[in-house]
Amino acid sequence: MKILMLIAGIALVLTTTCYAAGGDDVLGVWNNGEKDAKIEIVKCGDKYCGKIVSLKTPNYPEGSKDGVPGTPKLDHNNPDPKLRKNPVIGLEIVKGFAYAGDGKWVDGKVYDPKNGKTYSGKMTLISPNQLNLRGFIGISLLGRTTTWTR
Image 1: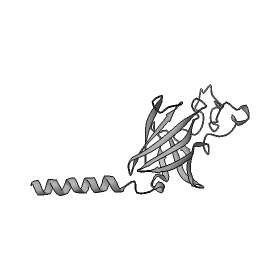
Image 2 (image 1 turned 30 degrees about the vertical axis):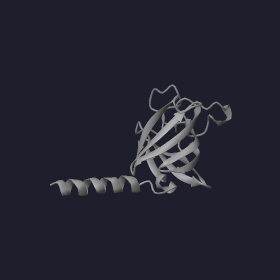
Image 3 (image 1 turned 90 degrees about the horizontal axis):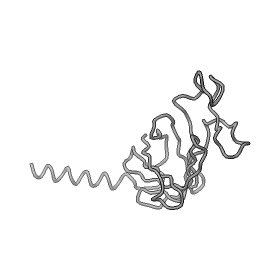
């Protein structure tokens, strides 16, 4: 019994240390924390970026005060008035992340279309199917972390 537990423990250590072997492990489609959007992370040169590829509710619902019901949701909170007519689907919300090793990406920017603000960001792959995304102002202590899932 003890040998079985030892083997299981070794297997767990090996799998948790091997899943973040390289920067490209973050590539793919992720559900945001609220599970109302899917974001595809891709390589942008030697950095990593991501855009919204689908929304749970892609159009404004009946009775919406944010837009015309039945039409695609727009980036209406963008601080740049010229960009407020851009659709949310296709919007780049993660950009400029550099792989720092050990399952971490740093020095990026995160745009939140719900409030129109851009934050400094870092990402940590906590398992092959879970990614912590932290947006912050100034220092990492002043921020919020959300967990994305594949």
